[in-house]
Image (cartoon, one colour):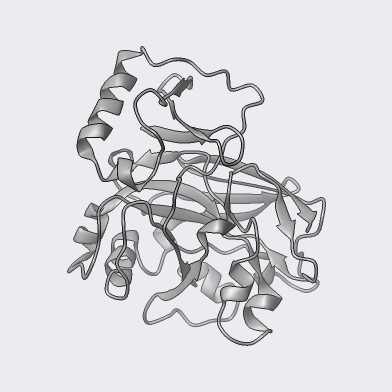
Length: 285
């Protein structure tokens, strides 16, 4: 299923995109697309049955804002340098273990919402990523297979990053990852049963119409199941938590000087197989 949240900021309601591409209202069945939904198989089954019946109310998509595909996110966990191509382009060795950082849930916005470039930014960068949404509580998982079994769905994410804040201002990566609006997420959540193999997905991103990233999740250093297993050794993952699993080659930081970091007025578009497409205009904060 493709599950969405639509409507004004703070007042989104749950919706479903059916097989014919028709947007349908789920607010009569569920209150939100969130961890509670993903953790409840009986409710998910009712939604599937309703979707199959064709009786869900139709929503007029014209002018309707699409919000973040997941509501009430507890935490966003980032994985750094997780593609061989990206590590190579920035001159880094492939890490021996996943690099883990956190993004605040309040950085999450809708897939087409405006992204704000911080006032002192000189190196705002793009990162198209596969997002993993946890569907069952995960702690101390024993294998990558268990990791995959705890995935509730997948989403498209732009892990926007300010590189100077990230690496030139001391401390951890957090300052470059947690600026407001820096985590566009959506347009929809695809339930895990529709993505049998998350390691075969094309990942693409354009800036002002020019293709910048053209990768595939097969290039990941640590596959999705291993990422979930690994992170569960250090923190408990709850339904609705999101892991952003790294970006392929093609970021601004990996390109020759002068590096084409984002400026106000730039438009970024990105997509992953089956997970839809995003479009953001960047403006000054």
